[in-house]
Image (tube, rainbow, N blue to C red):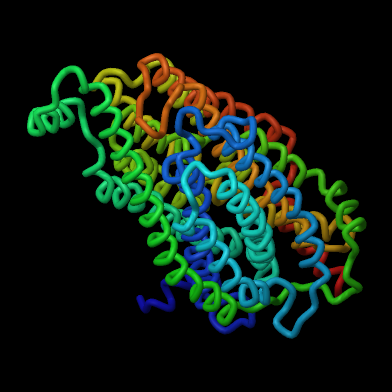
Length: 514
């Protein structure tokens, strides 16, 4: 079988029929791959950059009257929620956009370089550790980054419904695209902690290391305490300076690789289903949103599920770094999720056909809640318990993989539902809800991670955490995931849009247009 024939089979497309072709679908996926390089370096590591490289998680460090770690938590939560509620505005702008390239594609071209510039600005090594001024500047930059990123993210996901209105083809394209997005995010998630752990390992002294240094230098008992304090302080400051430069270099490399992928996605995709009527206003779009009850159920489910994968965000890295004493273990935590996610992603088309998207979504999240509940009660403080947790992480890749794909496909179906119901498609406002869900999930993940960091009593400057603090960190991270897994399944029991009904609506829409 020729490669082109294989690709047509994979995507469910027909050669030279004037509709979506594999080359376009691949270009769409490549743009998502690059986008997730940038999204992940910010979403997973900006918080760590603030607490561990700029030392706003160190004991006694404040921003005004607020503890440094709590200031970071509020910044992550506030900015992401602000950004999430910008998405409907951007969705409305997309629906009003009219260019020779379409209404979604041009944003990939226009925003690639601004996103790259603002990503680098977030990790500038010139920021001074523990300085309130640095925190204020980076907070402003982060807000600007979030707005710039939204301007590209909303139209990117809306583009999928402009490329094809065939729910099967669109589902196949989104399945492969989400696989590429997961791969892009996974590369960043796996390799950045390995790199940072390697370059900072020389600053991580154990008690025995310090004892040997004291012996070599002939330090006497009467000055031992001051000497140890000096060694630790020097070690942590050197560690922080190294982290600052390491994160910046990682950001530079990722931006250089990712930006051309935005342009590639723009150049090799085509919009076929874009409304030519008068562009709607924001107020009109919001009214459309509230007429799309199926979409609102998906949004509610996504918000309730914001904490289901919190251990793969900042909190998981804190657990690896301070409890397991090796931040490189975070790479293993994220890698363990990958096999289940890949298998689930490949099975999504079959699951959707066999059980429908709705019941596949509900089933995997109930399954995920049970698995995380077992993790919660088993714990982590023995080798056999860690083995059980490792198996659980592999299994948790299943709901993650299914969720990453099915929600996009379901939202695509709600675009068709909205057109059937009102005569208007509203791709921008509908897919703005998907990016809203994603951003609220990132906000909740970062917020719970930093709140857990503070509740556990971790001092980023000394790296100290008590056993009680370690237990607190575990209970907050895993417990939040259990609740979130079960909660997100509840709204979907009321979701009525089946694959059969979607096909009937598309046929009715086509008949009306004739």
